[in-house]
Length: 360
Image 1 (cartoon, rainbow, N blue to C red):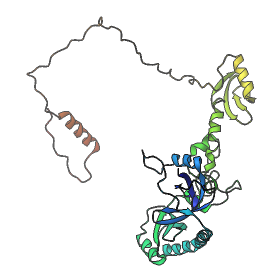
Image 2 (image 1 turned 135 degrees about the vertical axis):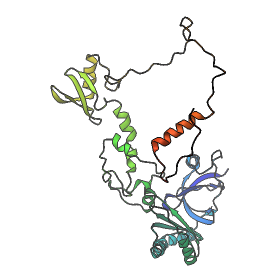
Image 3 (image 1 turned 90 degrees about the vertical axis):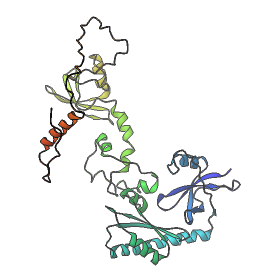
Image 4 (image 1 turned 45 degrees about the horizontal axis):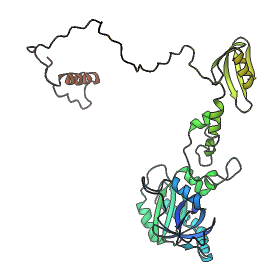
């Protein structure tokens, strides 16, 4: 039975293929030649067996409802000559990027060329660029195709994808997560920094790409679960010193900062605060009930039968008079439309609204 393998290319790009030869299984980081849309490409094996099947099943490459099974098979193992050819292409890609950059400057296009990637058989060149708005690069593609004698594919990417392709060192002193091990880039919002009580200054919580740090998501679940054990900041507690308001909490040292209008501030541990509230018969600090003075919550709707109201006096019901004049159909909507026009005032073009039927 063919085995599923994951093959990685330049810039953390990956795809899934089948390896039909079960007698000689592939190992991690083995070089292989795989089929692509227009020709052949060079890559290295990054996952095999069950790990590759799980990754293939969790990706969104297949259409909805399709069985997530790779359709293409690996052509062959890469030889030393194939590896040498791939390395030469990688070394020449920087010169190719400069050539593309010169063509972009000559045409005054508002785009930044980030990277260039040759296909292994040199039939296709993929150029990655960033831009603030839509760019018309049709003339640029024709110029590059005539110069480089290959099919040109220009792809616009975001700032995070650009950092993942180029790589770099973050403020922690390590390589970017997006270019080393983080294969999928998820959204990062400012709410993650608020939950961790970090500075909201973008310069302090942004990475090399200029966007919010991806590592803000790593410990977010810990902060959310840890804060559930503490009273909410700003909550008023009834303690042995009277009414005290929660000023701040320290989830690492298990401390709570309280302030009383009469006796001033104090710092206590979460365990001591729990014991103090238990002695007074107060709810634990994590029980966040309704605020003082807040309206009572509405109860569930009554599911039983409704009470019999037959004893209540019935209202008189009068039949419509058939001789009374009737209003024309649609008169109410027409009157409402005229009222709205009067409130808006005259039309900008000076025209008058079409007259409606006379009001009865």
